[in-house]
Image 1 (cartoon, rainbow, N blue to C red):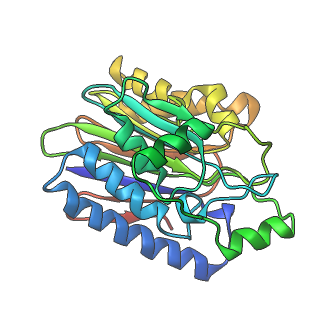
Image 2: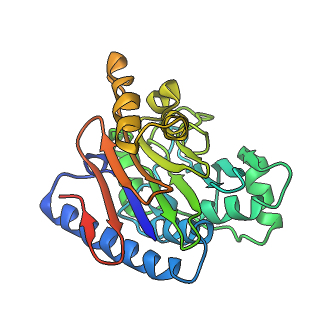
Length: 280
């Protein structure tokens, strides 16, 4: 069993030591709790569990920490993929729900598994998700002062369970102040992808990640025989011509865990039951 999570880029919100320590502690707690959950649940159930915890933590740009768009509204995206069945589900620009990843989870049973905008929001309401404002004072203050962040906030989880099955989940609150209708990478195969061989979750600038088809490339290369490290090296080298901004976490079906970023510093934590590794 292996698990790794990420919480976007540290510079997305703050560079002060207090925030850094808070994120380290939060990620360590969540990755340990998720590992305990993984002992008795599938990889698919576990990645939803972990990303729900990340969405519920205002330190991260997803769920209740989501950024505010240029029209003053919050729109979130999230996706889930099962490495065994290769089914992917997701919501794009959903509004007024606490946990977009949980809406993505119930969409797994539908034939139409990726919904956007009002369709995603209406589906959530019909499925019993109450109206919930994810706006927090910090994000409101940033919006009112028109402070622009780097736009690199996303959360994600990759897990390998006791049965050797892989799954990935990714959720984002957007980059902040974006044009209405902008679509992030998180609910696409560029930002969230898995099969029986490998699972990958991305954070960074969505447009760069989509341009590079990053997650799908890494998984495909592992499937074609690359080591996980070599798949990362090759794929991240293809970001260089346009200075692409991305960070990724991954696990392959041999239990290898890997992470890499093109710019400093992605926040992440991994756990194998013995050793916790947290970003420094």
